[in-house]
Length: 110
Image 1 (cartoon, rainbow, N blue to C red):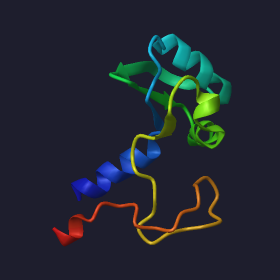
Image 2: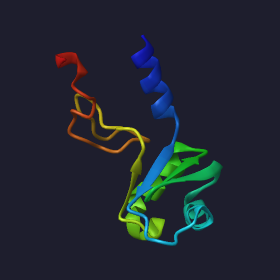
Image 3: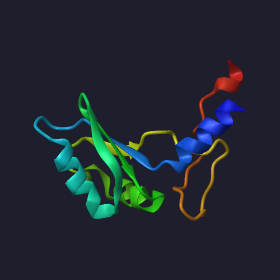
């Protein structure tokens, strides 16, 4: 039950991670850039060469992901902090990216 709750909370939380940040990029730089995709919730957390930012809506977070690293600022990539891929795959659903499945960890085989 706890794992189901954890997944639900993570998927409802539109947190993105920018990775491979260039030297000298500040939290303010990241937030100023990402605000162009929609409102942010809270501060930007810098950890090593990564930045973690919460959007207020999933739609804004998806817009930032679709724009890619070039639009997100001085970084090598941007993605959701959690793995949003479906276990069995999905396509054509509103509010999510299409995928071919197997996004969940293989804990069931452990």
